[in-house]
Length: 248
Image 1 (cartoon, rainbow, N blue to C red):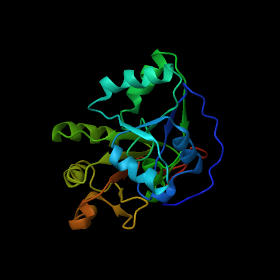
Image 2: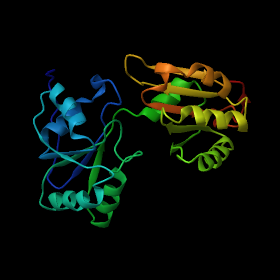
Image 3: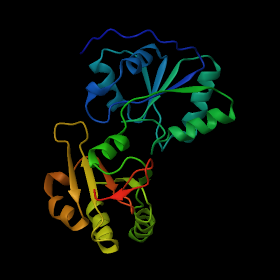
Image 4: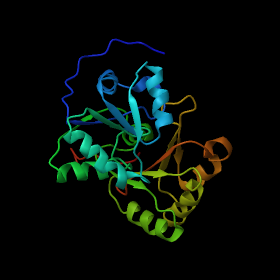
């Protein structure tokens, strides 16, 4: 257990806090995030076992409840009811920011409909981190979430992504990354791609090259863990400020 002095936070009852959590290294949690989690009456988490490890690391004792894609229809009304009762509710994702490829969006829609307030405790983001790790232009970028599972739909999805002038960020499963790169290689053999894996963990690495080059590298252990694929935009290195284009 690690003990650190936490800042004072204003956590009024009835205000929902969406709290960003580490994407790998537990040391990346913010002090304000820890303070909010400590002050909460209850924390809703995608995987309570995963979140409990984080809380135990920092000696936080708080009630935990599950909130994920498979129970969100049932749990969202419970969260709304708790907030209306004046409870201090915090919501976390397994990793990163709630609502980003995460059931938190269903909750915020319900809060809007009920005219209930919420706030965000910022923190780690795998998409922005992967963008910087890629070395591709950050001036204009588009996050497309997870690529479709079905191969035909994925091909259409990638055709659209390749038309984007700015850098494109895509979540991809380690089980489908090779298939996705094969499709990219057929559509645009020379397009530069980066794959960031195990971000913030011991075995973090960023692999760069065209699809064929990456297919040669992505084998064995490199096909495990969390992956973010970063596709260089159709315009290459383009600066919004000066409109110039150059090599990357």
